Image (tube, rainbow, N blue to C red; front, side, top):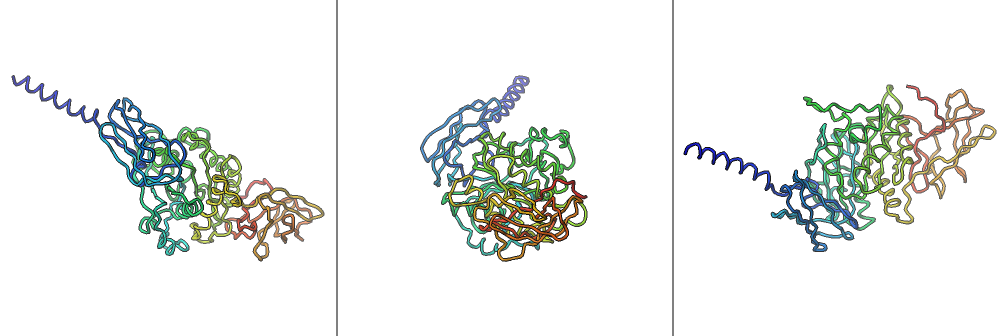
Length: 474
């Protein structure tokens, strides 16, 4: 009798444990919660965990339609729902027998905002490092049509299915802690488009680009050493793939319009590799998201005095310029005019963010009359010691806003550069140097720290550039 009682107790215990596994409640990744923003006018993916093999239904209040699928043998499920034009608030209900309701859901434009410290830098600034105009901007930031999501820092050797974070309302208390670059970008989109904006900030100061690329994407670059999958006491956020695994993978497939990126300072000394890694990251994310070649815009790193050692950051800016034309639906915002000699985090975040927004308004949203592209060198011609430069993306010409152009240099065959006198003309820029009789190469603002002085008439600065391909002096 005692043996039978023990057997029955053991059986009931096993049944109870298995029931906990078989009848788990619906669980959604953190990105799906109250206040979320879903991408408008498309089919957005909703996914999560549920009871093993259970039927899962998702009901959306904007069309009162129900979508259903079946959870897998591990409990995972995924389906797509159709979203209308921008609006809200709405509700989304998810059920596998027990319902979970998400409230205050907006339909609008969703953007991922990623990179290192210049993306992470909050509206309140870093200690002893301000954001210009932040006090006023934060004071007037209450806006029911912008929602914010900050991903908590996490690194992992294996792809994770979830991260920590939640959608929050656009109110001063939340805005002061949110990425300044992302906020100003989203604010300009909201003002121009008059639709809800969802901003997902997933950034980590000081990190290189390699940690933000997945394992499959990293295999395209022979010099990137993938980590061994073994326990480590402390995982460095500089390890390839680990930030993608912890801070990007959990939301892969979430409906977005595009991404903005502010990173590169930590890769300054590997400019040639970066020119390949930047397009590689874009292609990697696009392939994994599976929603086509979504828009991807990035900020060119600002001029800064990195000191006497290492490669001039002008080469990294050049790599970013090359990356900006390597793929379609990409673009680079230039901030040659707002760098700070002694601070790697420029205070004028709104200036750069607005330039990212201009790229999106022109190229993603097709708003006529808007230009987001800085002038770019088109051609160089030399005649009798005089250099003449022409530029693309300068339909109304160039300007220095009344200042003397001071950032041009020319060199002869001996590769020695000397300052050049520069003049804006009807067709572009003309250069003359009494120190170089037969110029063969031109460089503009090609130093670590420099304040750019050449612009399109719309105020967008010309990037640092060079016409030579001579090896840099280290």
